[in-house]
Length: 218
Image 1 (cartoon, rainbow, N blue to C red):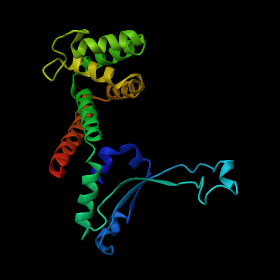
Image 2: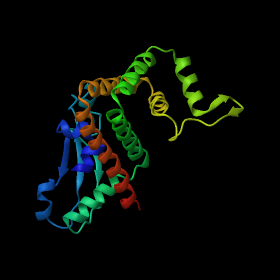
Image 3: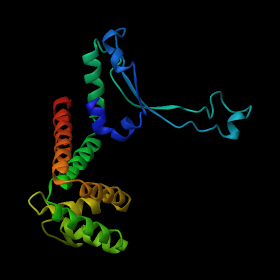
Image 4: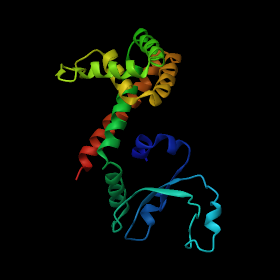
């Protein structure tokens, strides 16, 4: 469940995830165990063409769930089924890396001093109003691309936190910026003690995902 909360927090909180068989019944499930993870989907009414007498049977039939991951079909016990499902969920390196990066950024935002966080908030407000040209020009600068045929060292882990946050936000695009603005606003509403608690939670999530992916990597 902790892995699911790290990779699919919104779906878990909204109660949109379904394990089949239910996790609490795994220990008594018939063997072999085939563990499935589905996401509940809103049911969309079938289109008019689905009722055509020429349409194949099942055309337009509403689907109430989407399969996200499944274990091996021949798991011998509950532990094996859980491990197999976890391995599948962690097999997409891009998804895992994106989640780890996100938790690391959240850790950073909740662990930096208040004045630095306020500076980040002001920078985000400015970012929201720059032109597309300015956005990508700045992104290329931070990546070290100063001309088509010339490059210099870009932002890396040795750089100041503001530069590392800036390139992460620029790389994520405008669609992600609003969510990060809300995260910063929420962090600033907390006291420093509460922020440290949240920083610990986010740091643990990032470490857990990285270690789990390494341990379960085929």
